[in-house]
Length: 257
Length: 257
Image (cartoon, rainbow over all chains, first blue to last red; front, side, top):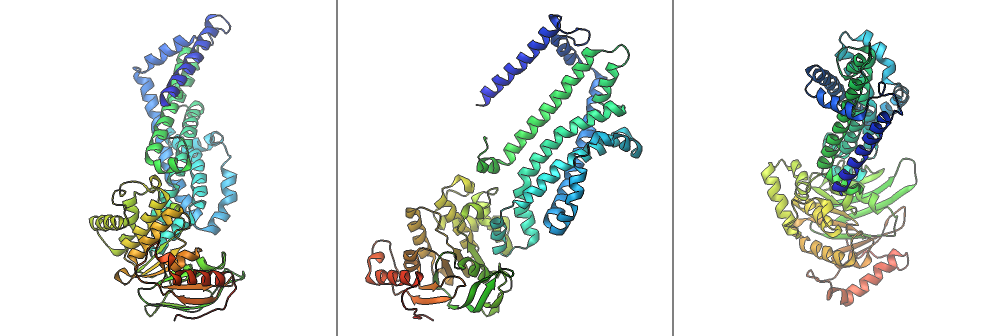
């Protein structure tokens, strides 16, 4: 099953590369604007030994990871507080629903004014964007914790703190993890967007720089390829971690393991 | 051991569910509780277990009024798949309540393994609940209750979700632990044969708001088995009697207490 998926994936990627290659080679698009896929891939390979580009990647990942970690902590704490105090949950609902759809990108100017360093701005924006999926997942998962599981623990004389620690947290963990995975992708988009707009260091800045002046579309696209690869890798690692840690959940909900 | 005086309960301002129960249970007795479906048996059990504060009346256990879940009480629920924690191994599930006993990890595991062995699950400790059949899962939750060494064991339709063969096996398992170390057992069931087969007494409840309709002593020998016991005249007679009482026909009797 896994093998077939890998084969199919490879065929898909090869097909897409072939189409792009054909489009520039045949003169369908101007090769100066859209370099051949083989050229882009060659540049992408060269970038792995380009110290400056690697420093940009490190910078992007640092801001991304910091923001995501902070968001996880905030969202989990807020989710537990809002989810276990009914009146607090009701009171905050409108605020949450109001703030959630605000695109992080719209807050870039605010972040630039508020924070002195670019890394801080990026982290704050990633944190903002990444908080919502985790918070929403935490809230919904808390609402769905099996009352009988809680009752079971209570019937052995355990108090509310033990129920929170031994039933609520394990029950919601798989959903929180899914929220983190969604937020990881969102966060990557936000951090690179911020770099595009605000400059400084990072993959986004690299993309802007390669566009400026005469422009090096081949290098720019090579940078974009790495942004895509990062997103793919992050998702794959998180999916694998979820499957490993929450086998009890995937098996019970009938999801394919 | 257990004294229930004029126990009444209604959820919020809803209708009266438990309409005034008086019941006395001696230490070491196994009392079967039967009644029409939806009569409030589970509510009654929750009040006895201290999981639900009754609207009126008094539950006294060993001379002490039950206001919260007593220390030496265990409950076995019908829905084993929800009552066992899927993220813990079977051994850890059984060992978890022993934290309340202040036992060290090694001692908890030893007690859990012993209890699992006593219910015929010696090999299943390191498996997860969802890897076991329904009957084995219910054995595991019985083991969890037994490992806790309660003086009062409450079972809420514990064999309602297993197949007929497993049900008989579990009934015999219950008979083998009955009177063990002075443990008192309250068994709620909707199976009239079962109530007679395992019980020292059968308490028949009326429909909601429920009251005690009859309290019958089971005059069967202590040693029972599925084939012989179910053929005894006393068994056949009692089964018919209980059946009539549950359906609301026949004369209420108070042969016990």
